[in-house]
Image 1 (cartoon, helix red, strand yellow):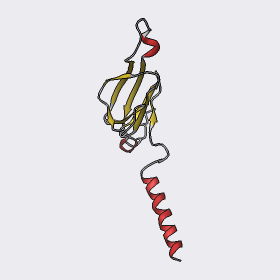
Image 2: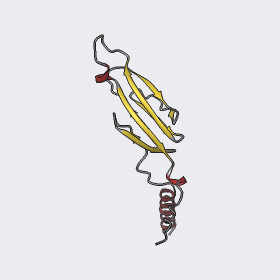
Image 3: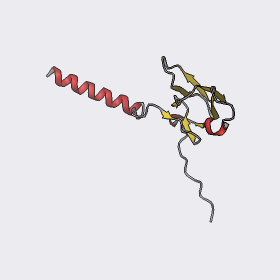
Image 4: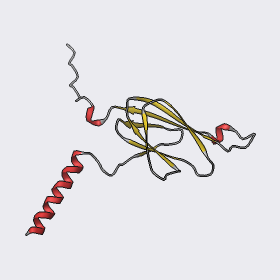
Length: 130
């Protein structure tokens, strides 16, 4: 009987947790190369860094905050902290002379929109007089 009660309590607690805090399967969004990525405030995004050469990371904007990932050299984790747009540029540091910049430089575009929890409720459209 004790095991059954414990099982039911754990099941109810986990269902309540997952429904209260959203879909737990989606932990982060992967930033897509040269494709716009939309994030909600509070969401996590990961930037995967190609391992074939060393890159400098340059950010234009202030909507993302870097999240420390210990021991990671091939990815950077970001959290969306405010509304707006940001561009991240990865530039190779060990590029040979004469190499094209465009073929090796990588661009990521991010737009942060309000979180799902803070979106206003949908109001009915006003009826125009006939």
